[in-house]
Length: 297
Image 1 (cartoon, rainbow, N blue to C red):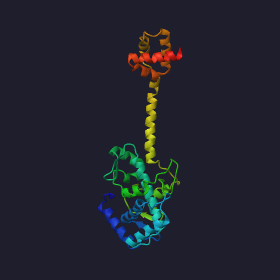
Image 2 (cartoon, rainbow, N blue to C red):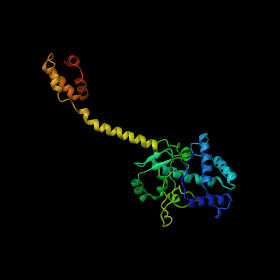
Image 3 (tube, rainbow, N blue to C red):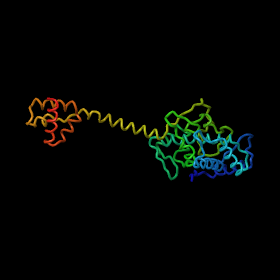
């Protein structure tokens, strides 16, 4: 079950009034649909159920699925929602999911599975939100509809870093996300990235598309980085030979000094063999030297 955020009475009153208006079929603006929390919950729940049943294609939901979802919403809320409006609202929540995944990957962020909350320390939170105000509602707050979003969007991973599909983790136009009204929708939820800037809505920015790094790919990338660092750190060790190597070799009195000198040079050229040689018993050391002498002299 998704954890719903705690709202003030004023916010709750606003939500209640909006739901009554939407349920009556009169949003107060022609062509605009007011999505309430209940409507969003129904839509995401229906689509998540389709995913669970394996009915979503690799390129996303079919038009018939969106029409079925619209029919369920119309039946429950007595509206005339279209499949296009469902599609537009789904895009909005896909952008929210992209933001959530990015924030979960923040350095120092902790994920609270029980409350679906991305937790930052007070200092980290204040510093981040100072430069990323739209992220504030998703930090140290329970994230609305997290499990439904995870079901719908979380399993749609691109094959390869640059692969794309109709439902992969791509952000959509930045100006759509920052405006209060998107594609004929009015945002009524305090947990979908409202800006707290009192100067009003920001100016539109150039439209861009960002590709989100796949979380699994990020984990593998970090793993490869650690392995590479370990190899670099141990790289010098491969060329090291024991300081007392010659002392040990020269103690094998049953061999001519010339042969021992040649074998010592062989060990110097092969540090790994030299280190292995040092771990042998004296008898086995003699076996190794004898084998080398027979092979080369």
